Length: 391
Ligand SMILES: Cc1cc2nc3c(=O)[nH]c(=O)nc-3n(C[C@H](O)[C@H](O)[C@H](O)COP(=O)(O)OP(=O)(O)OC[C@H]3O[C@@H](n4cnc5c(N)ncnc54)[C@H](O)[C@@H]3O)c2cc1C
Image 1 (cartoon, rainbow, N blue to C red):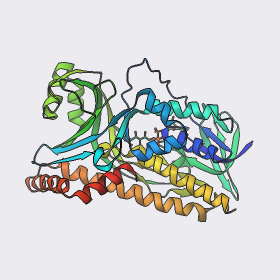
Image 2: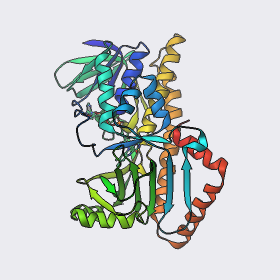
Image 3: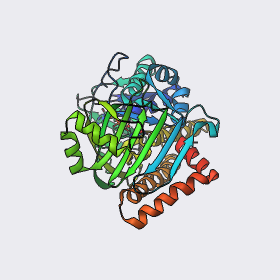
Image 4: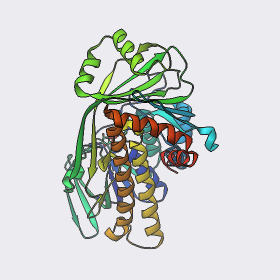
């Protein structure tokens, strides 16, 4: 049995970033994942799963020395945002120049981020990477948590971190329940070519029943995330490309002209999920294992990376003060801070989803007035941008 300071279970974008950050701080880290991530190659078609990374995420990747490789490979900065509503007048406009920043964020493939993080992990001699590996049992006693793995071996660590995603099996094994709300919606994702250029702008239109985002890609196309009720998703997926492009163009108010081409589409189920606790003896949760939020604000992985930054700061501070970095009293600070920020964000996105998803006339009027008002209130707008940027 090997012994480590920290064992990270799940090396998606969040788990891999955490493992790398802790290794760079001198912790002895083991990281395991059920599978190798699919490779990322520059010549491949842009993967359908992309995220809008906030400046705080880019800062973290910068500190981990992976941002330059990500940004130069295939990241697309967006400098402006336009948000408007199908049922009411008023528009919210953000511009990175107002904050003196180069960009409001970057659109990057999940696969590219994970690829660069795994490359850095493999190059870092201090990280024990175990793939494929699954946890089949876990116990905590005193100073250690032990993980029994599916290959018959075990390892133990002072702290085990569950980073194994929304359906975290480790969270279940730790006996941590989740609160869940099924939106009964699916997010249709595809990359589309439009008649007019995307202008390095992230566009979002609220529609009765869902939201539609156009996110600018480096090759001039836009990546769409279209949240619709489940039955509507099935109907849209069954359309041929021409009919889908026509419906998409109309739903987007033809802001970028006609939709002239689309890739094959995929659809992902949408849920709100919050772990009731982030802490168990000698274990914590991070990323989607702890919280799954509606994608309308493009914040899911950004929140996960804020978990990473907070956890690394908590562990390093405890160690430098010669305290037990994995003791419950140390980790309580991490759990309290992150759970309250994640919960607040999740409920805010949930409220926006409900408010804008309703076609009831008083609500429609209220939100139209709201967008126009927020747009005129410079300090509030600044605060919104600051929060979305993770500053
Ligand atoms: C349509 C859509 C659009 C989105 N857009 C954005 C956006 O614009 N911005 C944003 O910030 N977020 C966005 N998100 C959210 C974002 O994709 C997630 O928050 C993010 O992928 C979560 O990362 P993670 O590393 O926590 O989990 P995951 O990416 O799920 O990684 C989990 C890892 O654990 C491994 N694993 C799973 N089970 C086991 C096991 N039993 N044992 C060992 N390993 C295991 C997996 O192989 C994987 O490597 C979006 C989500 C959706 C659905």
